[in-house]
Image 1 (tube, rainbow, N blue to C red):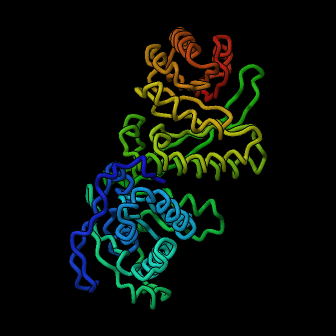
Image 2: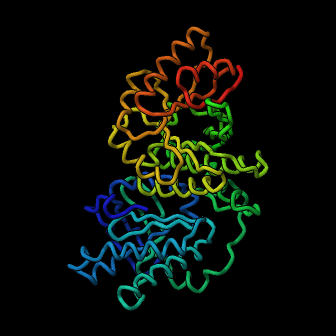
Image 3: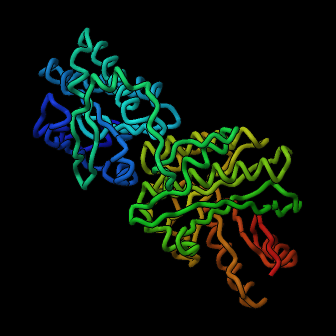
Amino acid sequence: MATRGEMDMRVPGLDVVASPAPDQAPTALRLVAAGVEESLERFSDPRLLAAGKVNVISLDAIRQRLGARWQLRCDQVYAFAERVLERGVGEAGYFIRVSATDFFIVHPDLSRLAGQAACLRYLREVLTHFLGDGELAALGVLQVTRISKGQLEAKPVDAHAAETRGDEPEEPEEPEEPLLPPAPAAKGSARGDLVDRWTPFVASDGRRLRVSATLEPVYELKGFTRIGFRMIRRVIVVSTEEELTSQQMAVLSAADLLRVDLATIVRGIARLEAETGGEQQLSLIVPVSFTSLASQRGRGEVVARLKEAGSLVRLGVICEICDIEGVPPGVLLAAVSLVKPFTLLVVGRLLTLTPGAIGRLSGGGLQALSMECPAGLGDAEFIGWATAAIAAAKRVAKSVLIYRASSAKRAGALASMGASHVSVVPA
């Protein structure tokens, strides 16, 4: 969850206009603090907004009552509001603070009136805690009708209708694609619910993407014993079935990459449970984008999934940080330090395999480096590549993982050159 320190609070939420008559109320504009625009992009689907699933609750009443004391007590207000929302919104929904006084809330599995009634309850609890009563809650809940860069367009809700009719079922609609992000599907298992929540999704550029995860055995080279599996993520454009390349993945927005990471972990866990029949593995290598670990909210969601995966293996998960090329060592070290307590090992995944690119990771705190063996190399080319790559990697990290060696013979050669782990995929 975004904290006050992460956001540019120079731009608080601001009602440009307001009206006590919701049906005829002109649009109100709520300004969004710098740094959270990308987090809201995936909720800009017009159908999601038209269905009334997205609302804002405002803490303006508390700020006005506190006056000069607001700056001294705002962190306390935020902390209490976040506790209320974490308890009320739950796993199926989403919330984030988007300005000095506004919380953005999505209830994908509630009707318009039920979602607004829930928002009124949340705000009333917060107002009562700090002001002694919640009478002003009806003025502090708005339905978001449009999301644009830097601002939200919203209108006041009909509080009376929400509270008197919020428990009425929605009228049935014609079947169509699920609203995004989708509500959990009733599949009889929490795992299936989580998969449906994260994939497929509409990316910030408008493409509909789905995420799949496969497992590949990984072996420790000293005794050639299997330590478990690595998750391989694939992101596919639904309309064309085209798989995104690593370069295309790297230019996805931060919000999109976080969804990819969470979908990969959840799908990978489900596949692990299905393919191993419950047999506990030593470890599991989980790929995560550096971008997701660089933000507090992303890191929190990823760590929660890493803990879940870790509970399924004997020794703990190995976190493999992707997209690290060009990341300054100090910045990388900060991300590694924050995720390290929850993992067995933190690995840096490399796409650029030159000695110079590898050397620039020195000081980043990585315990191991991983890379994929280039396809189609002859024996001499393979030896030349592996010798240089492993030697450069060993100057940065203690362990070196090489994926997709084309034979057991080449795996043995990698061991003799100093690699610690390997996966073998016969050509």
